[in-house]
Amino acid sequence: MAEEVHSVHEKVSQITRPGIKADKVIDIYKTWAKMYDKDMETDGYTGPGKVAKVLAESQGDRRDIRVLDVAAGTGLCGEEDMLDVAKTKNVYRNFIKEFLGPNRLGIDDDSYDAVVGSGLFATGHVKSDCLEQLIRIVKPGGVICLNIRENRLQTNEGCKDLESRMAALQSEGLWQQVSREIFPGFSFGHDGVVYLYRVL
Image (cartoon, rainbow, N blue to C red; front, side, top):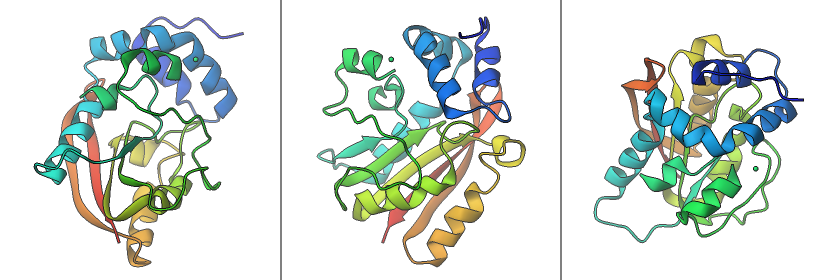
């Protein structure tokens, strides 16, 4: 049975607390899905908009790109259970419900021009062990744009190795960092970090 939580900050704290398991996170999101967008708007969550802007800027005038929004939730990145809410917005062509981790995704190599994701890295959510799969499904020359609340890089067990893993994959010649930008107001008054990588 899901615990009743009232404020947005309490909900986010609950779903990212140390030791939380993925199945518990899924249960919480199921009960929160219909109010998620409204709650996050009230909070001033700017992560999805920032990812969308960085991706658009990286593409110049090109608009005919195939984009995969990972850990899309209700589809906030695509606009400028959570998939059920996203389906009602008509911003996505396909919906894939699959665990994002080291497992091979049911997506062909080099299928997308870009992958985007906002706020996906946290305990009980997505870890850095998914990055190889994201690189695999993006065409060479394509981009991956992800963001995270900056303080999670030091405070959240699911995120502490993110940047070292990103650097290791660059050293392996799989991708190249285009930019890393700290931006204000990601959520709850915390700054965010947005990363843009080009797949090699």
